Amino acid sequence: MDYKSVVYNAARDGNLNRLKIYLHCNKGKDEVSMLVAAKTSGATPLVIACRNGHYDVAEYLIDKCHADIEQSGSVMFDGETIEGAPPLWCAAAAGYLDIVKLLIGHGAKVNATTRTNSTPLRAACFDGHLEIVKYLVQHGADIEVANRHGHTCLMIACFKGHIKIARYLLNLKASVNRKSVKGNTALHDCAESGSLEILKLLIDHGATMDVDSYGMTPLLAAAVTGHNHIVEYLIKFPNLVSRRERIDALELLGATCVDKKREMIGALELWKRAMYERYHGDGPAIPKQRMQKVAAYDYVVEISDPLALDDLMTDPDEMRMQALIMRERILGPAHPDTSYYIRYRGAVYADAGKFNRCIELWNYALDMQQNMLERLSPMTQSSLFSFTELFSFMMGEEGKNTSRGRIVPSVHISEILRVFKKAVREVELGGRMLERIPYQDRDVTYLTRVMVITMHLGGLLTKRLGHQSCTPTINRQIHQTLYDLVKLGIKGKLGRGVLHLACCREMALLGRYSACSFPSPHLAAVLIRVGADPNARDDEGNTPLHLAAQAHPCPAAVAQNLLQGGAHLDAINSNGDTFLTLLHTKQAHELVDVTRYTSLKCAAAKVIKQFRIPYRGAVPRVLETFISNH
Image 1: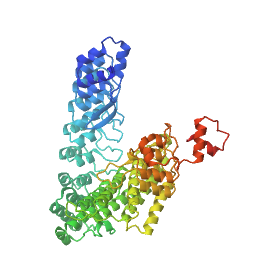
Image 2: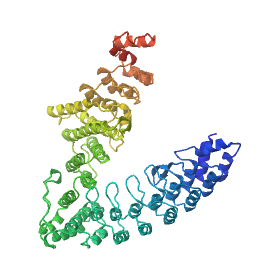
Image 3: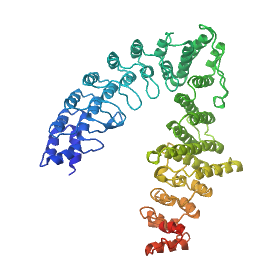
Image 4: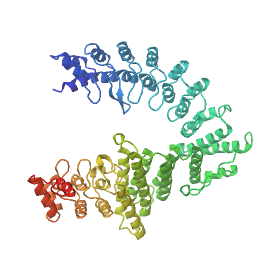
């Protein structure tokens, strides 16, 4: 019987009687200690009992079983796994005051943190457990301990809208203008969440209009999230908000009305107020900064004439472009919302069957992200992935009617190539970035995902090689870009290069549309043609041929392309498997002519290995490697 699981389940379910039976039924002290300290699903019995509010179980584990009250574990809250959570943190986060008192009464460290440096006090502030907050503070909890992102207890209380906790912390002289790692203050969090009551409270306690790392004030944070009441309240304070800041806030709020709320009339009224403030407010006029015309915005120029604003109501499409231009001017290209709403507008166009407009906007957003964000950013990954879905949909549904009655056009191969080049660039620069990190600290998760997305774009490209739109010039560019990618020699998870990925079913993207399946015979063929090594090995000793065999069923065309490109049929991986042993016997005979792809050199190597003939030092070093791989 698995006593460890039984004890854990009893603690999880609050079944004290069962727990007593299994812990003290002919078990010695050492075995009880081992069972109480053991983790199931990342948590000890005490951690899970505190998480689920089972006071009697927690008390029994502490008093009778001498469970370690500081031993942390992994628990789930709101669908998120919290790593390294002490029992006190779990009880505080879940709102069990009685268990909090129990733990502290037995000496639990009140400022013990999770792996992200979150304290029990911050956990209680997050979910609004005021009585627990007070109790923890009374027993020494530090109100200024921030998590790894620099978010304090006051910030999270403001963001979650817990005014009683915010007032309590402010009365304790919590630092009202303290900044997080990204430069935001409690006032930013409050403005973003939309709590006017808390915002007033913060201002009464001396909160100031600081800027975060994106240059955003709390006023702009309220405008970008669409909280009209926060914006209207703040712009009434000339000591807090300048005239230019009022103008920007009204314009940005109008842009949010267009893109987030679809309130065209409301947006127009806000823009009119901003325009009046520009030209008729106190002091000299403040003309709009002229932005360069952008093809993705259909070369629309931002309106600076008050009389021209009314004409926008007859042209909703131009109004949407105005919103994008204003947002980019006010927030700048580095702010995530700038590229987000460009992508959002492109998606709306795609849904309406206007695919060319979508592609232009998405390319503009992708360029913005690659210029402004850190390499391999999740936002850049998302943009590249969206392109794979769009192109896959267009290739799979070409000539069919959309839900809006439009015909899905043929995607031009040059458009796929344009995005593919950007993806290859992201792989290159992402690989360089990781090379600067010590090997033991590298995490290639993001790099691998970008490589997989790049391979899917490459698969779509090579599938189009025979298409009428694939001119000799484009054909050369495709081969050149794939050559550049192969030449980089970058490897993702498990040491797999691009040819490994092209031959691996596990690397298939989980998207709604699939115009390119993996393993991909046409992609593998072109990669070999431009120089990819068909005998390259990953960290498990697998060649691309091994991975193709594990696809079940192995695509015949992939195997043939690899073998014709020079792959060794009898190469072994780290488990001693060859391509043939990984296949079903029947399929092996259908796929491969063994005599055709077995060379005399390979046969000799197999004989040497089979009869354990000493060869190291007796043959050239290059042959030693060759023999060992057979």
